[in-house]
Image (cartoon, rainbow, N blue to C red; front, side):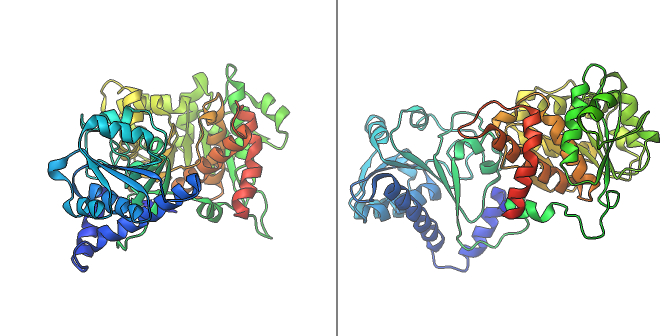
Length: 491
């Protein structure tokens, strides 16, 4: 599992460690790891470090110092290093001295620096560190906009990205590789910042850190969560997931939600709704019950809302009145936004909400009675949006989008690393809802069910799209789930 920590936490851990170490040790550790990564990249790209053109974009403070010391190490291996000082009056003196001692060249003129930047085999982005806020300063913007030939390696964080949130308030420098120190930063895992980070590599520097602020599951973590039937299992012991979805207008939503649910680990799927005929025709193993959730019989979790149409309000009310976990999606979220958090006030069982940003806007408006915020604003602040929803509704929230964020009302946050833009297709969310609901019925907590479902769903989208990628359908995503389930289980 990848763990990420806020800047405040990182700074505290660094301070505690530096108090026990000789002066400058922590920076030397970071610079050494950075230099090793850069040397490996240059060797892979050009066959050697010797003779490579390396440019350092050096801002003020320790971030620039890390970059300068790493560049000095490359210069000692024969790289032709140029240090471009964007804040000459505040440059890290020790790092600058190391570059000069190693034979590196130092420039402060923008035109010269831009020319070197464009010709470089590798650029070290040491402009702004993890404490930076508000986007790039004017003197750095031309470098983010200039054409480039070589690789850009960000030092701890791409300059212009907010380390804690992933927000990009202005122009940012896009990296091919980001080398982060001590721990991942949340802004490297969540969009839009994650899209600027490229491949993220972690260099350990000995920090002792508390529980993570944000985590991202990996194959082994998901494999440990996936339910597996035992020798004495039957369909009821494995869990029954109820799916209340579809309408005369949107029968396909029911079919797709059931498709996801059948592949999610529960022993049986019980369907209620107007699309029973279509569901049974496609999936004859589905248990069909007339009426709504109230009289449907025993289930261990409900999925409510996909394509629900006019019946969504009644269906939602009946499901929320049950004492089992409820996943609310699509039309169910629209109704919940009208009702507000009070609709969940009496529940003793957990609730999982799966909105996209438009639905998140309506839910937030329902929570505080204000006009819906702009969906684009919520998408740009994904961590804050998911946390705000989880707190307002006291529910686990799976916020769909460019980066899927799962937030628990207890404060835990997870980022899904497997998403693909090919999943932006009609019905994909219905499959995800059914899959997550099935994992709930199989006994996973809402946080684990949402995290595992998003992970598998993203992998299924990638598998269905293939390489280098092609349009997929929601049906193809559902059909790919058994394959990626096996891949995750096999490691």
